[in-house]
Image (cartoon, rainbow, N blue to C red):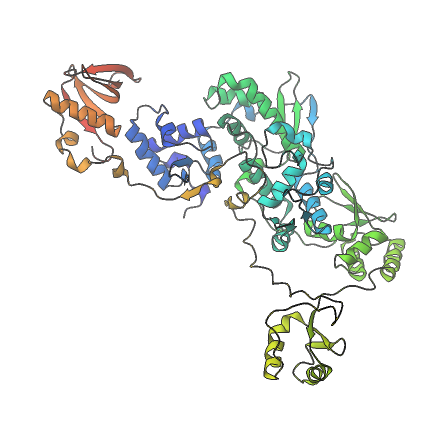
Amino acid sequence: MMDIQDRSPSQLPTPEQNVLYRIWTAFAGQVFDEEKLLSLDIPPFSGAEVLTAFLGLRQDGWVKAVKKAWGERLYFIPSERLLFVQEAFFTPSQALEEVSAAALSSEAKPGLALDVFNALVYGAKNGGFPLTSKGTVHKKHIQKLDEPEGLTGSDIAAIGLQYAHSDAYPPRAAVLLDLLLSLGLLTKESNALVLKEDALQEWLDLSLECMNSLLFQSIMERYGRTNPESQHLRQVLCHKGFREDVWYDVDRLLDEMTAAGIEMQERRNELYDEGKAWLRFLAGAGWADVGTSNDEHLLIRWKIPAGRLLKGEVDGRTASASGYLFIQPDYEVMVPPDTPFSVRWSLAQCAERVSDDHMSVYRLTKGSVALAADLGMSPEQVTDFVVSQALSGVPDNVAAALAQWGREVGRTSFAELTVLQCETVEEGDQIAAHPKLTEWIHRLGPLYFAVKPEHVTEIRKILTVAGLPPKRQIGGFDQTAGQWRQEEPRQAEAERTDSLYRKGDYDHFKSSGLVYSGRNEHYFQPDSEIPDKQDLFPGLAKIPVMWTRDWRSYHGTTAKQIMEQALDWKVKVELGMENKKAEFIPKRLFRNPWRVSGLIYSSDSEKPEQIELSEGGWQEMRLIVPGQS
């Protein structure tokens, strides 16, 4: 299949271009049905010509469909095509001119990728996010997610976000949980939202630019107000002509969009407020600065290549993961902005976060090293990590402290074991003496053996042959046999998830999250069945061939039949009137007396005329059926 970027609406046949343009201007990326499609004014095309072009757009992937439970179809321009359609049909001119800002109203914050990372760290250190009986995260964890750092509730409040459990989740906590769920980094279990280890590892291995691309695509797909005008503005702000670190005038952009017919003049003030709220959200997420000009115009300065991120044209690879941190004598660790998140993850496991700004700051403490041991990172591993990542070396006092803390923490630990229990000491002696079992078991007492879980299947077979077949069900110790209770070994992790980053693939934004504003077609069943164009004209094979082939006059009764057939199929009729040819699109039929109203296109006029014709109001005629005439 041809790459999306190699296609262009300008390569489509003229009818398909015109229909796609009107669909885009009227609906942006929102869903619509056939009735709304046919209500669009797309001169000089008849309804049949519109539907024929529409089927061509579906076949080429410019429009997709979903089906509701009762069979009704909804259509939409898919996300991966939307920016290409916008760039083909509208390019700002004056809005692309560089301007100067008089004041900075919202400065870009450290970034949504960092907010998501910190939420992941917190979830990892707390065993996920436990749920209440109502299915919401416990209040103390919500409060932690809602701490006012990076993106804040005030940055989110005005963008019209709608989400589940809005009475329990403040906006910032809802956004973080929604992104973690929709990107597959969290999964919901019966009593908690838990981290998916395989997805987490893939996420941490991504470059910051790739993370930003995925997050940016996600919020463009799922956040923001659903009216087409608002979506148009969000999309046009990502036009490839807007460069990073340059101020642009959003008021000029709105003027140009209104002049082009993309926005409605009567909604200008409302749309301005929606745009202002969206820009503040972008600043809170770290993607743009917001300012004002001397004449109080709204300005934006991108900190990222928005169009490139939206199209997924980024490098997902990270740089070499060594030598990134600056270790200070006061135990603080300075983290430069280009530090890979895999390095940040290891640091967050063994150090306490102090702040995030242009540089993040962490602090090594005895408590943080002890917590790292609980999380599976030994003091020796902490020291090795710090030494390998210290760009300018480790101060002597810090190295000495790490060595001392290593001697004081993590000296004992609990291990999960599968325990084999037998009934008698004699059976225990027999098992202990079996030559094939010595490498896989360790005797804990007269009746108990510690077993390596990965060898349970082999041990079961050996004991069965030896006349000591274990029970099929792995159970616990009763009160007379001992105090421990051994659970069944954990199942291996399910198959590794698909790559989170696949160019042009938006499916990972349709996972179950909290937010249900934005686009909603993913709630319905995809429909890839595309009718044949001939299905638009039922009974075509049964009508006389001359109706579509010959230019001629007919008896009054037949002429009315042909006109009524044109109305039923939504096709044009070529008419002879006063020695001139004209194309007529019938819209409504009247009886008693018989007459038909519609639009007529004469050869000497570019605009159609509303007209009503009665029997005998024309001479020659011919049906114009797309694909037949």
